[in-house]
Image (cartoon, rainbow, N blue to C red):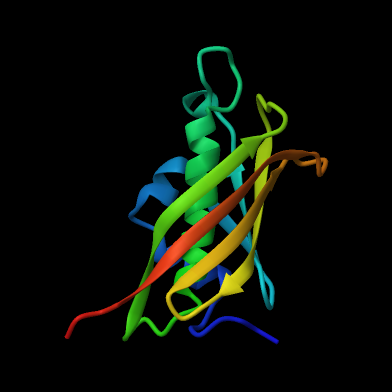
Length: 142
């Protein structure tokens, strides 16, 4: 059963993020499932730390983008919106080049909080990092 409360497609997700940080990083939404989103991030020199590996802040920003985007698709945007409350990320392996792939799924979709799992992998499916994002669900003021 789909979890989305708004129309979710690759096109709508790309439009939603067109002028923001996700676009600046180069995040591309590539798949929408009934209960998950998938996106890719091509790695380049601008995303690496001086040692030539992916900067941890980039992987954290990618995870935050994935969970926040998904979370905001699970609420009625005329009444509510989601913002990050807490994020945790464990970097398991380094990556220097290629494509970073993220998949996010919810652990919990509550009235006031949501908790999301975000897995970051390389093109061969090797797990690079795991993240847990907690979102606050806030009411829009009239």
